[in-house]
Amino acid sequence: MSEALTMPKDFLWGGAVSAHQVEGNWQADGKGVSIADVMAAASREQPQRVVTDTVEAGQVYPNHWGINFYQTYPQDIELFAELGLKAFRTSIAWTRIFPNGDEAEPNVAGLRYYDDLFDRLRAKGIEPIVTLSHFEMPYHLVKKYGGWRNRKLIGFFERFAETCFHHFDGKVRYWMTFNEIDNQSDWRNAHHLYQDSGLQLDSNVNWEEAMFQAAHNEMVASAKAVIAAHKIDPQLQVGAMLAMVPIYALTANPGDQMLAARAMQYRYYYGDVQMEGEYPQWLLKYFDRKGYQVPISAADRATLKAGAADFLGMSYYFSFTVKERADHKVEFDEHNDLVDNPYVEKSQWGWQIDPQGLRWILNWIQDRWHKPIMIVENGIGAYDHLEDDGHVHDDYRISYLRAHIHQMELAVVEDGVDVIGYTMWSPIDIVSASTGEMAKRYGLIYVDRDDSGHGSDRRYKKDSFAWYQQVISTNGANL
Ligand code: BG6
Picture 1 (cartoon, helix red, strand yellow):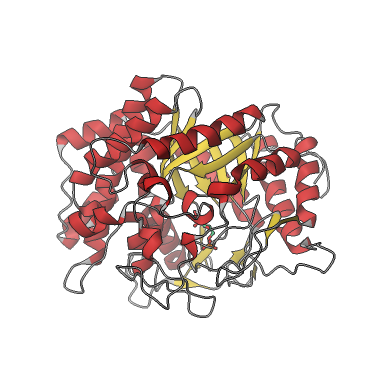
Picture 2 (cartoon, protein in one colour):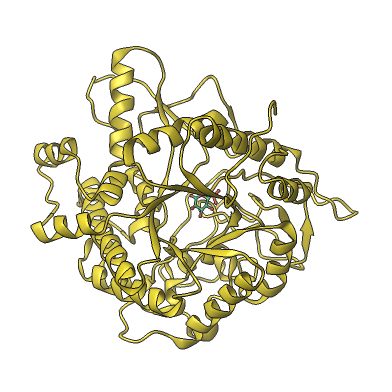
């Protein structure tokens, strides 16, 4: 990298995971079944994970074991401290606190587990950053209530959120409500509807309309959580969490440009609602034109306004590109309208690698929502090779992270974007959310476990571990 850039003094350098991708021990201490627990593993070639309703013999359920973090967290936190993390993002498995989601009282053993996790992090000077719902809602809420299309879930989530805010007050200051709530903008993909909203839809239902209905309920629930948090402790900061993906036009053709602009509006209306508390006009018109029933009451509008998020948590992995549709319609269909960008490379899983897109999107966010930003995920899934001597030479991971961190630093130092933290994905190998593979590795620490769940679980520091350690110790000056 050319010149060294100096980041703000209290910048939160960290690492991120989610509960269902690391904890395993899916039935320990009264935990209920989450939507991730009944999702079988897939592969790079056949990425669609199958939801099996019950646990079926012959299927592989990688979230049942994760990386056994439920038991290994004390030792893993030692490694995170050695790495120098100032922040660690994880999620609370909803099913450890309310196993079915609709109970009146929480499961004390679940609360105790997270008490100890957060205490140990704090003891090492690591700030916990916690997502309430990261693709792991109780499966019971899907089966009995039909997922987030049912408004009853607003109350269940509120209870869960309030319980956590109360119980962990003094231990956790930064919260986020729903992880990557905007993934479901690709509503033709059943996986996203299920992971984001617990929707399992028949073909006679309009999936797009159902997505908008479910997302509305989630955003009202999120706003209620923000309001509750501020009542419990005005110091609490509650963020929205979006997967930020710049969507470029393929060319300067005005038709390409118009579709790219609409695609950005479509994918980020969740941000407009959560960050500003208002539905954009173009979308209300779209609902009318399509005849969609999305019951947005006056009370909901007031809640959304009062419960606007304090900051934006975001992930960044890749960018998208679109070109004008053959029918010239200015309607974005993420499943069908994306084209390859000839200017960027791809990862082994076909994800476009675009470091500069991070600077682009950070500027876009700052101009649009005017609130602090925390990058809570950024990293590359790759095949790693554990050498006989215990080394993993992952220079490709270092290159990816270095280029992205550099662009973030340019956004902060040169453009003045208010980024308060960066928790890379992830400090340790995890189970992939989209495919359920272990082989799609993200970590700075290698975990000896394979796709079928076999392995010693031993941890090995990859080359990227030492590299990130010096990034943090120089406050990002030495990339
Ligand atoms: C984000 C999720 O979508 O991307 C994580 O918040 C996920 O849970 C990460 O692991 C990387 O995606 P994947 O599918 O490669 O694990």
